[in-house]
Length: 180
Ligand SMILES: [Ca+2]
Image (tube, helix red, strand yellow):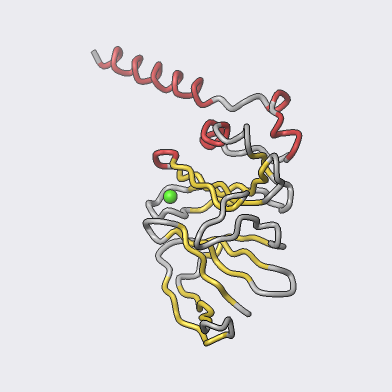
């Protein structure tokens, strides 16, 4: 009985491994664009977007991993470009449930511009506190307010200018402006 149980467990594990096998690097167009393989678990979800978006080589590394959703599982953020307009953006994939979120790359939102081409550097931001720049109605800087973060964010910056954080607040991604 125990032996049968063990056999079925090892078969199940083998099946899972086969299913998760990544696309062969030599056959993948994406590999020709960015020479940095994605983690195996993220391939399938990323493939759903490959028709309209490609990975961008604007940064090294070309993707960032951390727990952006706050559930304890490592997630991924991939810097991408819209194939037709070349507008830049970020594709987030939460590992749990493989939930995907597309930011920028031709899609404008209240929080973010439709093109993140202005970004010079990006990095994972792990601090649990930051200061958001606040503005008056006329666009002048009003001051700043303290913001507490429950999970990691991604910092986008211009070399000589301002920047901010993209942060998942538990419901959606928001922009926290920092600097001028
Ligand atoms: Ca997570």
